[in-house]
Length: 113
Image 1 (cartoon, helix red, strand yellow):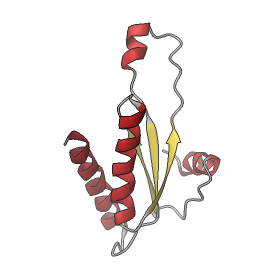
Image 2: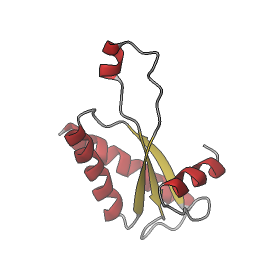
Image 3: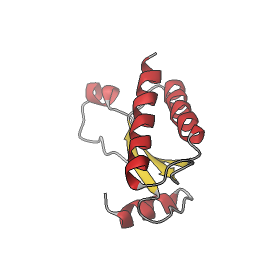
Image 4: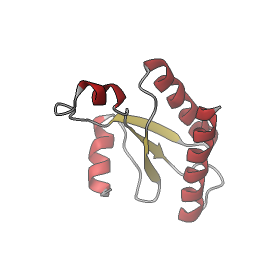
């Protein structure tokens, strides 16, 4: 995703990302249930905060006007998570990317538990 677009979307939710390479963005597809959606968001937030990073959420807009009711009932929830800062003990881009990937994998395992 282009940095300019991500920065404009982050600004809409009150975030000001640092320089390129000091923030990350990912897609999250939580369950449709509001309670489960919040629970999944809490798992992601806990893992990111544990790494000494901050985060913000963006609801990704969808246009489901052309979908049948049965398809709308199964339509995924889509959230974009912004991870702000590399956190502690993360000295370079490779380490930051690895940390983001490990946080994503850990959250996936916790959701399934």
